Image 1 (cartoon, rainbow, N blue to C red):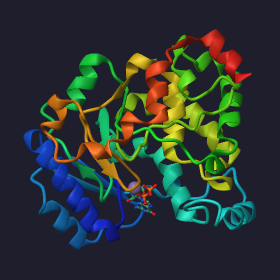
Image 2 (image 1 turned 90 degrees about the vertical axis):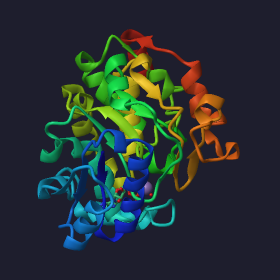
Image 3 (image 1 turned 45 degrees about the vertical axis):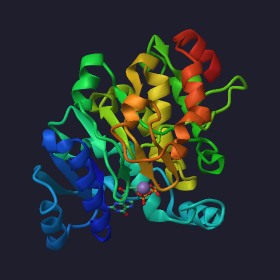
Image 4 (image 1 turned 60 degrees about the vertical axis):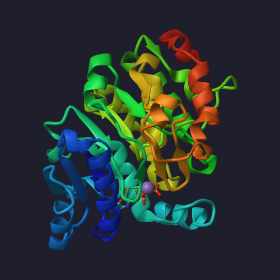
Length: 313
Ligand code: GDP
Ligand code: MN
Protein backbone atom coordinates (compact mmCIF):
# COMPACT_ATOMS: atom_id res chain seq x y z
CA UNK A 1 0.00 0.00 0.00
CA UNK A 2 1.98 2.98 -1.26
CA UNK A 3 1.36 6.73 -1.02
CA UNK A 4 3.25 9.86 -1.83
CA UNK A 5 2.12 12.32 0.81
CA UNK A 6 2.95 15.61 2.55
CA UNK A 7 3.18 16.32 6.29
CA UNK A 8 0.17 18.63 6.06
CA UNK A 9 -1.94 15.70 4.79
CA UNK A 10 -1.66 13.78 8.07
CA UNK A 11 -5.40 13.73 8.81
CA UNK A 12 -6.22 12.73 5.24
CA UNK A 13 -3.79 9.83 5.09
CA UNK A 14 -4.86 8.58 8.53
CA UNK A 15 -8.44 8.58 7.30
CA UNK A 16 -7.49 6.63 4.16
CA UNK A 17 -5.36 4.08 6.02
CA UNK A 18 -8.09 3.52 8.56
CA UNK A 19 -10.59 2.79 5.79
CA UNK A 20 -8.22 0.52 3.88
CA UNK A 21 -7.61 -1.40 7.10
CA UNK A 22 -11.30 -1.66 7.93
CA UNK A 23 -12.35 -2.69 4.44
CA UNK A 24 -9.50 -5.04 3.60
CA UNK A 25 -6.09 -4.86 5.13
CA UNK A 26 -6.89 -5.77 8.73
CA UNK A 27 -7.05 -9.35 7.46
CA UNK A 28 -3.69 -9.16 5.67
CA UNK A 29 -1.50 -6.53 7.29
CA UNK A 30 0.22 -5.57 4.09
CA UNK A 31 2.78 -2.86 4.86
CA UNK A 32 2.14 0.82 4.19
CA UNK A 33 4.94 2.71 2.46
CA UNK A 34 4.66 6.48 2.76
CA UNK A 35 6.99 8.63 0.70
CA UNK A 36 7.71 12.34 0.87
CA UNK A 37 10.05 14.81 -0.78
CA UNK A 38 10.69 16.25 2.71
CA UNK A 39 11.37 14.56 6.04
CA UNK A 40 8.24 13.32 7.76
CA UNK A 41 7.82 14.97 11.14
CA UNK A 42 7.86 12.78 14.23
CA UNK A 43 4.25 13.79 14.90
CA UNK A 44 3.30 12.52 11.44
CA UNK A 45 5.02 9.20 11.98
CA UNK A 46 3.61 8.69 15.48
CA UNK A 47 0.06 9.50 14.47
CA UNK A 48 0.12 7.29 11.39
CA UNK A 49 1.59 4.39 13.37
CA UNK A 50 -1.15 4.85 15.98
CA UNK A 51 -3.97 4.30 13.46
CA UNK A 52 -2.86 0.92 12.09
CA UNK A 53 -1.42 -2.37 13.29
CA UNK A 54 0.20 -3.02 9.88
CA UNK A 55 3.89 -2.17 9.48
CA UNK A 56 4.51 1.37 8.21
CA UNK A 57 7.67 2.46 6.41
CA UNK A 58 8.47 6.14 5.93
CA UNK A 59 10.80 7.17 3.15
CA UNK A 60 12.31 10.26 1.63
CA UNK A 61 12.68 10.58 -2.10
CA UNK A 62 16.19 10.56 -3.53
CA UNK A 63 16.94 14.17 -4.61
CA UNK A 64 17.65 13.14 -8.17
CA UNK A 65 14.07 11.85 -8.54
CA UNK A 66 12.36 15.07 -7.53
CA UNK A 67 13.28 18.07 -9.59
CA UNK A 68 13.51 19.71 -12.93
CA UNK A 69 14.14 17.27 -15.75
CA UNK A 70 17.62 17.76 -17.26
CA UNK A 71 15.94 17.97 -20.67
CA UNK A 72 14.00 21.20 -20.04
CA UNK A 73 15.16 24.76 -19.55
CA UNK A 74 14.12 26.78 -16.52
CA UNK A 75 13.21 29.82 -18.58
CA UNK A 76 10.79 27.87 -20.78
CA UNK A 77 9.25 26.14 -17.77
CA UNK A 78 8.56 29.53 -16.15
CA UNK A 79 6.88 30.71 -19.34
CA UNK A 80 4.77 27.55 -19.50
CA UNK A 81 3.58 27.96 -15.90
CA UNK A 82 2.59 31.56 -16.64
CA UNK A 83 0.83 30.64 -19.84
CA UNK A 84 -1.12 27.78 -18.31
CA UNK A 85 -1.87 29.24 -14.88
CA UNK A 86 -5.49 30.01 -15.68
CA UNK A 87 -6.02 27.40 -18.37
CA UNK A 88 -6.53 24.38 -16.10
CA UNK A 89 -6.22 23.22 -12.50
CA UNK A 90 -2.59 23.18 -11.28
CA UNK A 91 -1.71 24.95 -14.57
CA UNK A 92 0.72 27.23 -12.74
CA UNK A 93 1.98 24.72 -10.17
CA UNK A 94 5.60 23.62 -10.34
CA UNK A 95 5.34 21.10 -7.46
CA UNK A 96 2.34 19.41 -9.07
CA UNK A 97 4.47 18.77 -12.14
CA UNK A 98 7.27 17.31 -10.02
CA UNK A 99 4.68 15.03 -8.42
CA UNK A 100 3.31 13.81 -11.77
CA UNK A 101 6.79 13.20 -13.15
CA UNK A 102 7.78 11.36 -9.98
CA UNK A 103 4.74 9.10 -10.01
CA UNK A 104 5.26 8.43 -13.74
CA UNK A 105 8.93 7.59 -13.78
CA UNK A 106 10.41 7.14 -10.35
CA UNK A 107 8.11 5.89 -7.62
CA UNK A 108 8.67 2.25 -8.59
CA UNK A 109 12.41 2.80 -8.21
CA UNK A 110 12.25 3.89 -4.57
CA UNK A 111 14.41 1.56 -2.39
CA UNK A 112 11.42 0.87 -0.08
CA UNK A 113 9.59 -0.70 -3.05
CA UNK A 114 12.53 -2.89 -4.01
CA UNK A 115 11.06 -6.14 -2.65
CA UNK A 116 7.47 -5.48 -3.71
CA UNK A 117 5.93 -7.40 -6.62
CA UNK A 118 2.74 -5.32 -6.70
CA UNK A 119 1.63 -2.01 -5.29
CA UNK A 120 -1.77 -0.60 -4.46
CA UNK A 121 -1.58 3.13 -4.62
CA UNK A 122 -3.45 5.13 -2.00
CA UNK A 123 -3.95 8.84 -1.43
CA UNK A 124 -5.01 11.05 1.46
CA UNK A 125 -8.71 11.91 1.75
CA UNK A 126 -10.18 9.23 -0.49
CA UNK A 127 -13.05 6.96 0.49
CA UNK A 128 -13.33 3.19 0.29
CA UNK A 129 -16.96 2.16 0.56
CA UNK A 130 -16.92 -1.62 0.29
CA UNK A 131 -15.56 -4.61 2.18
CA UNK A 132 -13.19 -6.49 -0.06
CA UNK A 133 -13.57 -10.15 0.91
CA UNK A 134 -10.51 -11.42 -1.00
CA UNK A 135 -6.90 -10.47 -1.67
CA UNK A 136 -6.62 -8.41 -4.89
CA UNK A 137 -2.87 -9.03 -5.11
CA UNK A 138 -3.41 -12.80 -5.12
CA UNK A 139 -6.31 -12.35 -7.55
CA UNK A 140 -4.09 -10.42 -9.94
CA UNK A 141 -1.29 -12.92 -9.69
CA UNK A 142 -3.60 -15.91 -10.24
CA UNK A 143 -5.15 -14.31 -13.32
CA UNK A 144 -1.94 -12.89 -14.76
CA UNK A 145 -3.27 -9.35 -14.41
CA UNK A 146 -0.87 -6.41 -14.63
CA UNK A 147 -3.00 -3.29 -14.17
CA UNK A 148 -6.11 -2.82 -12.00
CA UNK A 149 -8.30 0.28 -11.83
CA UNK A 150 -11.63 1.40 -10.48
CA UNK A 151 -12.44 4.73 -12.21
CA UNK A 152 -11.65 5.80 -15.79
CA UNK A 153 -12.55 9.39 -16.66
CA UNK A 154 -11.47 11.62 -19.54
CA UNK A 155 -8.41 13.86 -19.33
CA UNK A 156 -8.52 17.61 -19.94
CA UNK A 157 -7.12 17.94 -23.48
CA UNK A 158 -5.24 21.17 -22.66
CA UNK A 159 -2.98 19.29 -20.23
CA UNK A 160 -1.79 16.68 -22.73
CA UNK A 161 -1.63 18.59 -26.02
CA UNK A 162 1.39 16.76 -27.41
CA UNK A 163 1.33 13.55 -25.33
CA UNK A 164 -0.16 11.38 -28.04
CA UNK A 165 2.12 12.66 -30.79
CA UNK A 166 5.09 11.99 -28.53
CA UNK A 167 3.77 8.49 -27.82
CA UNK A 168 3.37 7.80 -31.54
CA UNK A 169 6.90 8.93 -32.22
CA UNK A 170 8.21 6.63 -29.46
CA UNK A 171 6.29 3.70 -30.94
CA UNK A 172 7.67 4.28 -34.42
CA UNK A 173 11.23 4.54 -33.11
CA UNK A 174 10.98 1.57 -30.74
CA UNK A 175 9.00 -0.99 -32.65
CA UNK A 176 11.00 -3.87 -31.19
CA UNK A 177 9.63 -2.99 -27.73
CA UNK A 178 5.99 -3.28 -28.76
CA UNK A 179 4.00 -6.44 -27.94
CA UNK A 180 2.49 -8.68 -30.62
CA UNK A 181 -1.00 -7.59 -29.54
CA UNK A 182 -2.18 -4.61 -27.53
CA UNK A 183 -5.21 -2.75 -26.22
CA UNK A 184 -4.12 0.45 -27.98
CA UNK A 185 -7.59 1.11 -29.40
CA UNK A 186 -8.74 2.17 -25.96
CA UNK A 187 -6.55 5.28 -26.20
CA UNK A 188 -6.63 6.03 -29.91
CA UNK A 189 -9.81 6.66 -31.86
CA UNK A 190 -10.86 6.19 -35.45
CA UNK A 191 -9.35 9.57 -36.36
CA UNK A 192 -5.98 8.50 -34.90
CA UNK A 193 -6.39 10.96 -32.01
CA UNK A 194 -6.00 10.34 -28.27
CA UNK A 195 -9.40 9.45 -26.76
CA UNK A 196 -8.48 11.19 -23.46
CA UNK A 197 -9.36 7.93 -21.71
CA UNK A 198 -7.25 7.06 -18.72
CA UNK A 199 -7.32 5.03 -15.56
CA UNK A 200 -7.49 7.30 -12.54
CA UNK A 201 -4.16 6.44 -10.97
CA UNK A 202 -4.93 7.76 -7.48
CA UNK A 203 -6.19 4.18 -7.12
CA UNK A 204 -4.24 1.58 -9.05
CA UNK A 205 -3.01 -1.91 -8.32
CA UNK A 206 -0.09 -2.74 -10.54
CA UNK A 207 2.35 -5.57 -11.17
CA UNK A 208 5.50 -3.52 -10.66
CA UNK A 209 7.47 -5.54 -13.18
CA UNK A 210 5.46 -3.55 -15.74
CA UNK A 211 6.87 -0.18 -14.61
CA UNK A 212 10.28 -1.79 -14.23
CA UNK A 213 10.23 -3.17 -17.78
CA UNK A 214 12.60 -2.00 -20.51
CA UNK A 215 9.65 -0.87 -22.64
CA UNK A 216 8.06 1.26 -19.90
CA UNK A 217 11.39 2.82 -18.94
CA UNK A 218 12.18 3.65 -22.55
CA UNK A 219 8.72 5.19 -22.97
CA UNK A 220 9.09 7.29 -19.81
CA UNK A 221 12.57 8.50 -20.79
CA UNK A 222 11.26 9.52 -24.20
CA UNK A 223 8.37 11.47 -22.65
CA UNK A 224 10.73 13.11 -20.16
CA UNK A 225 13.02 14.21 -22.96
CA UNK A 226 10.07 15.76 -24.80
CA UNK A 227 9.47 18.06 -21.82
CA UNK A 228 5.70 17.76 -21.55
CA UNK A 229 5.74 17.05 -17.81
CA UNK A 230 6.77 20.71 -17.45
CA UNK A 231 5.83 22.55 -20.64
CA UNK A 232 2.36 21.02 -20.51
CA UNK A 233 1.03 19.20 -17.45
CA UNK A 234 1.15 15.54 -18.32
CA UNK A 235 -0.34 13.55 -15.47
CA UNK A 236 0.86 10.20 -14.25
CA UNK A 237 -2.65 8.88 -14.92
CA UNK A 238 -2.60 9.39 -18.72
CA UNK A 239 1.05 8.32 -18.85
CA UNK A 240 0.43 5.06 -16.96
CA UNK A 241 -2.76 4.47 -18.93
CA UNK A 242 -1.32 5.05 -22.39
CA UNK A 243 1.61 2.80 -21.46
CA UNK A 244 -0.80 0.08 -20.34
CA UNK A 245 -2.87 0.37 -23.52
CA UNK A 246 0.06 0.25 -25.93
CA UNK A 247 2.09 -2.35 -24.01
CA UNK A 248 -0.53 -4.72 -22.57
CA UNK A 249 -3.40 -6.85 -23.77
CA UNK A 250 -6.94 -6.31 -22.60
CA UNK A 251 -6.88 -9.55 -20.58
CA UNK A 252 -4.02 -8.09 -18.50
CA UNK A 253 -6.10 -5.08 -17.40
CA UNK A 254 -8.83 -5.43 -14.81
CA UNK A 255 -11.71 -3.24 -13.69
CA UNK A 256 -12.17 -3.70 -9.95
CA UNK A 257 -15.88 -3.10 -10.11
CA UNK A 258 -16.25 -4.17 -6.49
CA UNK A 259 -13.95 -1.44 -5.17
CA UNK A 260 -16.39 1.34 -4.26
CA UNK A 261 -14.25 4.43 -4.25
CA UNK A 262 -14.33 8.19 -4.05
CA UNK A 263 -11.64 10.76 -4.77
CA UNK A 264 -12.73 14.39 -5.09
CA UNK A 265 -14.24 14.63 -8.57
CA UNK A 266 -15.67 11.16 -9.14
CA UNK A 267 -17.28 8.34 -7.23
CA UNK A 268 -17.73 4.73 -8.15
CA UNK A 269 -20.37 2.81 -6.23
CA UNK A 270 -20.96 -0.81 -7.32
CA UNK A 271 -24.55 -1.55 -8.27
CA UNK A 272 -24.49 -5.31 -8.64
CA UNK A 273 -26.48 -6.65 -5.66
CA UNK A 274 -23.79 -9.11 -4.56
CA UNK A 275 -21.28 -6.23 -4.47
CA UNK A 276 -23.43 -3.38 -3.18
CA UNK A 277 -24.48 -5.50 -0.20
CA UNK A 278 -20.96 -4.97 1.18
CA UNK A 279 -20.90 -1.21 0.49
CA UNK A 280 -22.04 1.92 2.30
CA UNK A 281 -22.38 4.18 -0.76
CA UNK A 282 -25.52 4.92 -2.71
CA UNK A 283 -26.35 3.81 -6.24
CA UNK A 284 -26.90 7.39 -7.38
CA UNK A 285 -23.14 8.00 -7.31
CA UNK A 286 -22.03 5.29 -9.70
CA UNK A 287 -20.14 7.27 -12.34
CA UNK A 288 -18.60 4.21 -13.96
CA UNK A 289 -21.91 2.97 -15.34
CA UNK A 290 -22.15 6.04 -17.54
CA UNK A 291 -18.43 6.59 -18.17
CA UNK A 292 -17.57 6.97 -21.88
CA UNK A 293 -14.19 5.41 -21.30
CA UNK A 294 -15.66 2.38 -19.56
CA UNK A 295 -18.01 1.92 -22.50
CA UNK A 296 -15.04 2.08 -24.85
CA UNK A 297 -13.17 -0.35 -22.59
CA UNK A 298 -15.98 -2.87 -23.05
CA UNK A 299 -16.35 -2.23 -26.76
CA UNK A 300 -12.83 -2.40 -28.19
CA UNK A 301 -10.43 -5.32 -28.18
CA UNK A 302 -6.78 -6.05 -28.91
CA UNK A 303 -5.19 -5.49 -32.30
CA UNK A 304 -1.91 -6.86 -33.67
CA UNK A 305 1.29 -4.84 -33.68
CA UNK A 306 1.14 -4.29 -37.46
CA UNK A 307 -2.19 -2.47 -37.07
CA UNK A 308 -1.03 -0.60 -33.97
CA UNK A 309 1.86 0.77 -36.00
CA UNK A 310 -0.53 2.02 -38.68
CA UNK A 311 -2.41 3.95 -35.98
CA UNK A 312 0.89 5.41 -34.79
CA UNK A 313 2.05 6.60 -38.23
P1 GDP B 1 -4.79 15.44 -7.48
O1 GDP B 1 -5.35 14.14 -6.97
O2 GDP B 1 -4.43 15.35 -8.93
O3 GDP B 1 -5.66 16.61 -7.18
O4 GDP B 1 -3.40 15.70 -6.73
P2 GDP B 1 -3.06 15.52 -5.20
O5 GDP B 1 -2.80 16.86 -4.58
O6 GDP B 1 -4.03 14.63 -4.51
O7 GDP B 1 -1.65 14.79 -5.30
C1 GDP B 1 -1.53 13.45 -5.69
C2 GDP B 1 -0.72 12.68 -4.66
O8 GDP B 1 0.60 13.19 -4.57
C3 GDP B 1 -1.29 12.77 -3.25
O9 GDP B 1 -1.05 11.55 -2.59
C4 GDP B 1 -0.49 13.89 -2.61
O10 GDP B 1 -0.39 13.69 -1.23
C5 GDP B 1 0.85 13.73 -3.29
N1 GDP B 1 1.55 15.01 -3.49
C6 GDP B 1 1.19 16.03 -4.31
N2 GDP B 1 2.09 17.03 -4.28
C7 GDP B 1 3.06 16.63 -3.41
C8 GDP B 1 4.28 17.24 -2.94
O11 GDP B 1 4.67 18.35 -3.32
N3 GDP B 1 5.00 16.52 -2.03
C9 GDP B 1 4.61 15.27 -1.60
N4 GDP B 1 5.37 14.64 -0.71
N5 GDP B 1 3.48 14.68 -2.03
C10 GDP B 1 2.72 15.35 -2.92
MN1 MN C 1 -5.62 13.41 -5.12
